[in-house]
Length: 156
Image (cartoon, rainbow, N blue to C red; front, side, top):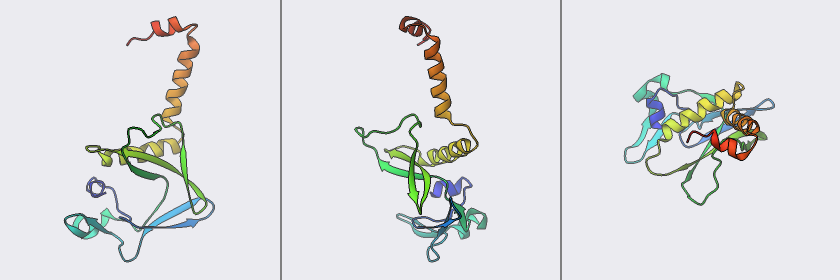
């Protein structure tokens, strides 16, 4: 999370997010009043983000739009590799998109978190990359009259 702050993103909360529901489908996340804008860095201790990075590095609240579930890498686990199988989590009666990211050493979670956020914004604006790819694949398969022709057109 510290990497995200260093890259210009703003911190709402570190470990504990207080979520409230507004209206039919809006969730707002805030930091707990006691730990708001503090972050624990193992080996360093607690740091106060606005004092180190400036007041622009924090915000009081933010709409909760996507949940990122970080899990330990398991080669035998079934993981959605295409993004076609949308998963949600229910928070206070509101279905929120949930992305599960299996972690192994060396994986750059900062960049992955940024890509998840940008991809979510694209989906929200109507562009779903996995569905676009799937439609392209299905169209190519429909064009092929037989397996031989389909394989013949494959450049690999």
